[in-house]
Image 1: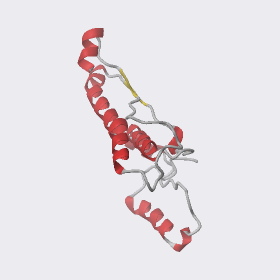
Image 2 (image 1 turned 120 degrees about the horizontal axis):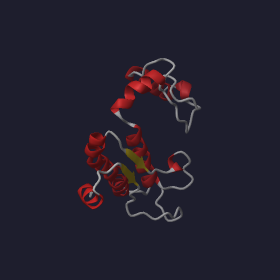
Image 3 (image 1 turned 90 degrees about the horizontal axis):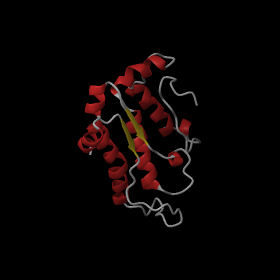
Image 4 (image 1 turned 30 degrees about the horizontal axis):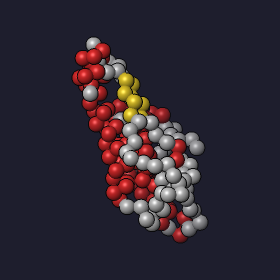
Length: 155
């Protein structure tokens, strides 16, 4: 794909947009509920959204690094932040794609410098938060997203 684009345009790839979608129907009434959805549906969505994007990004990186420039846009969904319809497989795959998009080695040290504590959370600190949810002190907490990140995320 990238070789063909270079041959046709005479230039290396400098931008990639990943918007792949495995066979999917946006029909909330027809979608299987959590107790019915098969792993195969999750696997199909992850293969399309995450594996497809990963393969494309990895193929684009050498040319982008050689040019000293490149942009990658991975198209997600707001359904994992506001799941108004039961698209469990699609939503999980797009959330994984967001995680892949935000994860980069070069960003790790930058993230640490941006936290009020000037470091990243340790596994022990994260485990403490998990233990809270498992303990009697967390008995009234449901459906929450606790961010344990030394103060990086503000909301």
